[in-house]
Image (cartoon, rainbow, N blue to C red; front, side, top):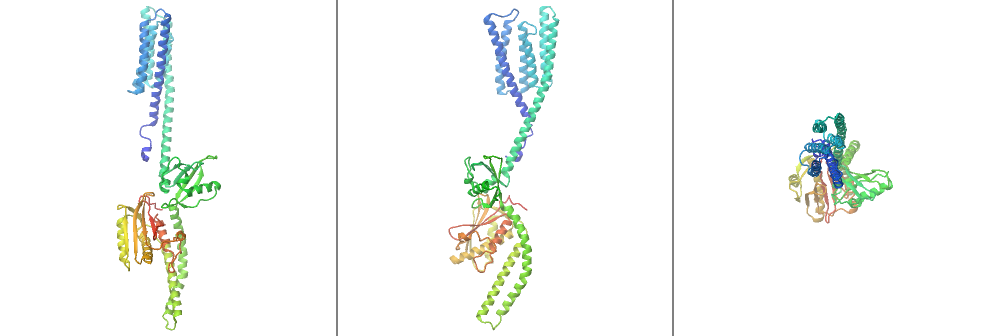
Length: 545
């Protein structure tokens, strides 16, 4: 469901609620009519069986009226269940039938202003509640005319004028109009209240739907677990962070993520303990969890916020680079000049003919290490002065084929790079110059280590799309000796190197460049050799800081 469809439609929900209430009220009145008809038929049968009929009653007309009224009462309930026709027409027909039936019963009864006349007031009140405006007043007028017509007809047939009966009928007519006005006022307020309640209910439903949509679409992961660590709710972002696992009503936090379950238990023991970042799954991002109780009590649910550290890592990187820039500027000013002097002096000493081989070797060592120190300074300066990334959208297969061709052409020794793209139309968004720097470093390392083991400079590059994280990936696989498990956590640390001539900044800078482009560089364990995987952000989810 889109956001637009979750907002209230142009049709007012309050009016819909009012209309439904009118149908229900009409149904109640129809059952009242059926009960009244049953009572009238029952009373008639009791009088018939006991021969207690009063003199002056028109039995055929009375019997025909109550039986017809009983049949029409049943028919009215059946039509109401079908919701056939317009509501106002059904109400008008029902009320007019009641007025006519009561007037006929009053006439057939032979008494003036009997108890049956009071039923007209009930009918007028019901009609005024079910409808409003002129139609409700029309019902009161018809009921009053029926009463007066009955009195006029009795006066003509009896050849007499009973003033008291006319006055009593007039009062009943006034009561009908007063009842109509009062019932309309009450019904209007009830309809307004129902309409307001309907609108409020619809607003609450829209708000709930909007909140649900926001929770599902927000980038922050949200999990709700009960006191038994059973997952009550998880939003889409969090589900994707943890690799889109199979979830059901019995899923527990332990099934979703053992690390997160352990952090929840640690937080339960000490709410002031800060959770540490962890990897959601093998190919997932590094996340950090925060916990809070939704209510007080022993059986309260726990709300867990799971944040992707990508943004925080970018912001931390910007602060780190800012401080690193000032530091490296001071280092460059204070060290590079004397370092240059030492390197120059070592070169001059090497040119001296009076040096023996041991001294010449020492001068060579001095020169090599001054060059290494200078390279470290240059790399740090390059890192601190790096410009902001300018990501662009590319087709991964086309871009990588072009880059691999250019890379091969710049190599002094021949190399064999096998490229496999499992998704021909795969796209990714990144700064091309910074990605070139990352891949150049990874390619050179991979070719060098492959040559150490196989004697051939070979490399395998695989482009794919991760269904779990919905992100493009790029694997650089070599045939080298691999990396020992105890060293895998250290290879991305600055200045860590296993080579005598290395600076230990290559992989560190490569990861920093990837994080600046909201990508991720990880080491993947393989059966033979090494695999470095770059996981790019989804092309539509790049966030510019």
